[in-house]
Amino acid sequence: MKLRVWLAGAAAAMALGSAPAEGQQAAVTGYLASAELPNSLTLLPPPPAKGSAAEKRDKEAAKAALALHGGPRWDLATEDAVLAFPAAAATFSCAIGAPVTEAGTPTLVRLLRRSFSDLGRSPYPTKNKYQRPRPFTVNGKPQCTPAMDAALRKDGSYPSGHAAIGWGWALILAEVAPDRTDPILARGRAFSDSRRICNVHWLSDVEEGRMVGSAVVARLHDSAAFKADVAAARSELAIVRAQGLTPARDCAQEAARLAAG
Image (cartoon, rainbow, N blue to C red; front, side, top):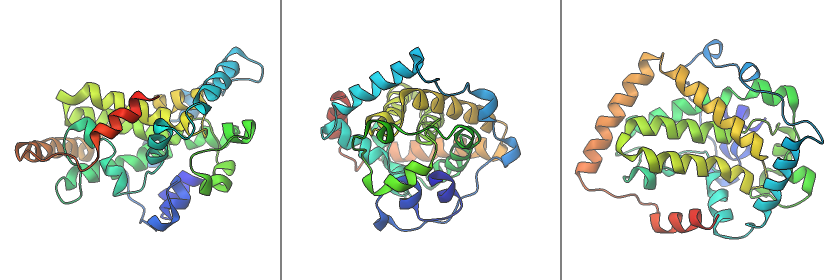
């Protein structure tokens, strides 16, 4: 299963939908032990039943996403599929208004890496139980990471692990940069919806992924190490801002891509 494989230290590309050339990364220990993670099976309802109004809503949302195929919003969704570092660290840099790099903000990058482990593990009890087919396997249309076709077919669609991670990161970053809460949360919402636009997740997968992400972040606040890293990352970011440094990411292009979808 793609996210679990990454968490075990396998190739980030094969685990997360990024290009194989990005190579391998070692597993990173999260802030929470497995027994401390929220149980997604307790949190979430079953996926929408066949023929239900909820399933119809999912299919309509998937159809709407297909209209964006090949456009600027599709391009951003393809970039959002990459959860491998160091690329993933810069995902929210425009929303934060400052660069996020290993050299300049090492504590913030560590915060993202470690919380990734917690956010990525929590959806799997539900994924494994239901093994919901992904949209591209149902509608036969392209998805934005074709190199990951085989792996994605084996990994349950409900809930979205990417959505749990992206929304969880947004909540955490809003604590690190509270004056940027609105753009950060807006980017987190868009990041998670990129999975629907990529044709790899249904709308309900994304929505319930956000629920899991919220639950994990709530639980993280019982971790002294997590709270210490949030405080240190806030101070670190203040120094970067005081230096007047700006994101290396093309923020105007990102804004245009978001507006397109």
